[in-house]
Image (spheres, rainbow, N blue to C red):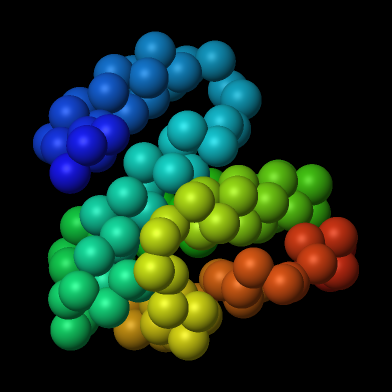
Length: 120
């Protein structure tokens, strides 16, 4: 397991960065990533159902972007994060929002063109 970082360390680091960003008003990919990190085991097929923290993150992501530009930005952040997941199951990732009961205004798919998200 050379080169791997314990999930708890990653979550703690992301939480620290998020706390530093709160109040600045700018949405960051770090914030988006932190909301989806609890979904990693599910979207790689290691868990049968999305954990509660994962679904809470999906719901927060759904509430984050207010306008078209923000939605497109979040979409690009999610695609970038998903591309880094080894063993990502694209069908599971695509169905994640529905599994959490929180549909997003765009699909979770690596091949989706985020610029096609309709205006808010």
